Image (tube, one colour):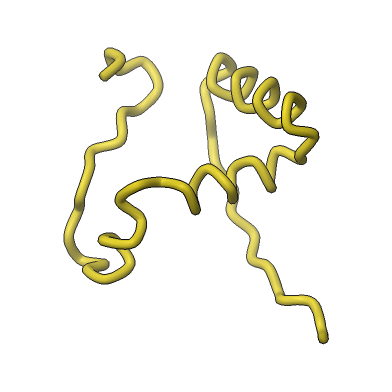
Length: 68
């Protein structure tokens, strides 16, 4: 079976977020890319977002915003 094609996504993260992501990826022996893919796939609201792409289910804070 041929491998599925992947797409490129370029993102900007504050250094603290990137360090936390790298630490989580290392702990699970994953690449940063794979760790992000797993985290996004496990996001609880992802199914709802895929069913209703024009509706925002949650507000994701930007770097520097107060923690939830």
